[in-house]
Amino acid sequence: MEITNLNSGMARDSAAVAAQQVGQAARLKAETRPVEKSDAANRSTLERHSREAQAQAQAQAQAQAQAQAQAQAQARDRAQAQAQFQELNRSELRAVAEDIRDRLNRMGADLRFVIDDESEELVLRVLEKESGELIRQIPPEDLIRLREKLEELTGLLFNQEA
Image (cartoon, rainbow, N blue to C red; front, side):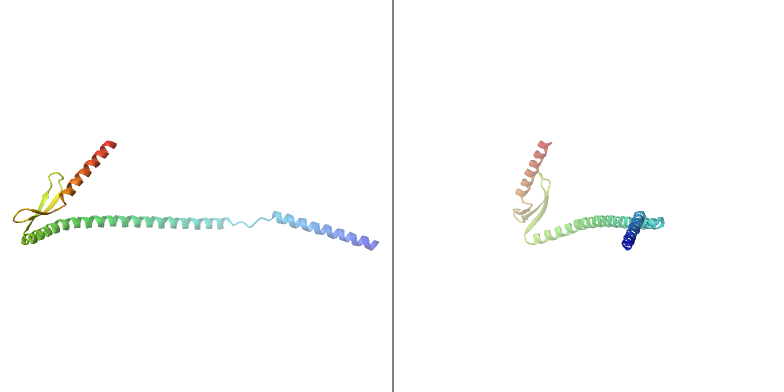
């Protein structure tokens, strides 16, 4: 029996030692915290993020400035082109009108630019040279009167709503 008592005593002692070791391991594990970054590492990360944000903001500002400069340049170019077109348009229009008038005169027709009394629109009339009979009118008389009626109706519509 002594051997049995000795074996059971040793088993109890081994179980107690094992329990102590498990308890110590659990305590150590509970006390152990994850390794935190040092203040220097945190500062370094913050500085890197700050630099990235600044670089991104600068890139966006540059892109906006470039887009604005392009829009201004395009507007300036359009204005210059329009001014040149108007200047050329007037002089070319006169030249073309003279050329058409000369050609029509050789064909026995007369070309007249007239301002309509009622609509105050520019009207082109092609007349037969000898009789003065109207060959063609641009815009046609019907179209001029129709435009006047539409303007009148539009005026009535807006006056009634106001």
